[in-house]
Length: 537
Image 1 (cartoon, one colour):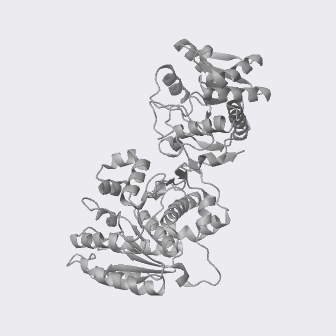
Image 2 (tube, rainbow, N blue to C red):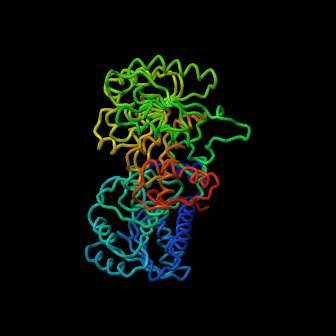
Image 3 (cartoon, rainbow, N blue to C red):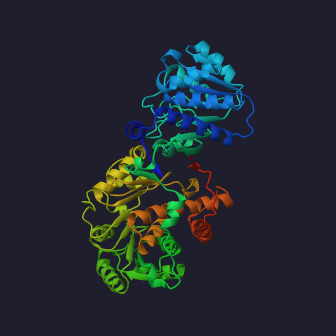
C-alpha cells in the first residue's frame, strides 16, 4: 500500500484533474459519497442528529456532500461552518449552495458566542463528522478552531474524520497544537504518512482508504509503502515437495558472550522457525558446552575468544572464513547473522569491523554488532556483500551520533538517509518499524504491539530475517517479511493470551500455528496500533 504526503496527494489530484480531465467536482462527489457509505457501515445503529462541522475549503466541501446524502436518506443532519459562508469558494461553494437549495440549514460559527451555541447542539449529536481542515494543515491551530477541537474531544459523540483528523500533520503525524481524536477516518486516494506514523496513528481510529477515481498508476512514484498481508504472503519462500535441508540455505549466527547466551539461542531458533535449512551458531569456545545443551536443532562452532573475556576474539576471523568457504562449496545460499549478545570487548570490535565489510555473503547485523560499528567506523558503503542493519532507537543513536529523542523525532527520514549513506537495508525498530533500502524506498510495518517491549524480541527478529535471507530472499524482502511476521506473531499471541506476560520465546512458540493461519489467509486483521485499511471503489 503506497503512502503519500500532503503535497504528493495534491499533485495526484492535480494530475487527475488537469492531465486526465476528471472534473474536480466528480472527485469531491466520490469522496463525500463513499464517506457517507462508510458512515452508514460503521454506525449502523446511529441515534440522534449527525453534526457535520466544516471548514471553508475542499474538506468542508466533502462534508457538505456527506450532509446531502444523510439528508436524502432521511437522517437528521446539522451543518456548522467555521467561518463566513461568503468566503467559501470553488467546488465547496457549489456543494454549499446545493444544501441551501435542499433547505438544509448551515450555521455559521464566527464568534465565541456562536461557538458556545454550537457546542450546546453538538453535545446532543449522535455522531460528529470532522470536515474542518483535512490534509492541508502545516502550522499549529489557534483561536476559535483550537477551542472547538478541545471541546469536541470532551464530548461523548464519536467522531468520523474526513480525510484527516483536524490538527494532525498529514506528513509526520505530529499534533499541531491540538488535534481531534477520531474513531473512524476516511482518507482519499492513498493513506497519508501522518495517519500511520505515531502519534498520528492514535488519532485516526479505524482507517478507511477509498478510491475516488484517481488512477492507481499515478502513485507509482511514491517511495514509501505500508506492509500488507497479501504482499507479505506472496514473499513466503515456497517449500517444494522434492526439497531437502540444503534447499533452504545455511545461516551462521555469530552471537553470544558470557551472560548473553540467551540472545544467541533465540537468534538461532528463530532462524530455524523461519525455515532456514541449516543453522550453525558460532560461539566463544568456552561457552560451547553450554550452548550444546541449550540448542537441539542448531549446530555449534566453537571459536577463539578474547583472553579471559569469554567473548569472540580477533583470532576467530580465520576459522569463520574457513567455515564459510567450506559450506559455500556445498551450498551457495550461505548467510551470516552477526551481533546479538556478542559484547563490545576491543577484540570483539576488531573482529566485527573486519567481518562487516569483508565477508561476501549476505549479512544481518544487530545489537552489539551495530554498537561495535558506531563512532568513527568508516561505514559499509563498499561492503563485499549485501548488509541489513536492525537497530533499535538507542543503537541507531549510537550509530549516527545523535540522541535517542532526536532519532525518534525523525524516524522515517533518518532511516532513509542512513540506508542511502551506508549502502545498507536498515530496519529501525519500534512502533511502525521502518525498513529503508539504499535506493530510497521505505516501508512502514503494520503489525506488532507493546508486548514486544521485552528483552530478546529483537534477537528473534534478527534470526527471522537471517533465516529468510538464507532461503534466498533479497535483503529488502527478507527484512520486510521478517518484521511483518515478527509483529504478527506478537498480535497472534496477544489475541489469544492477552496483552501482558509475553516473552520473546512465546513468539517462537506460537510461530507454527500463526504461520499456518497466515499462509491460509485466515488470521483476521488486528485492531491494534495500526487499524484496518480497507478499500472502497
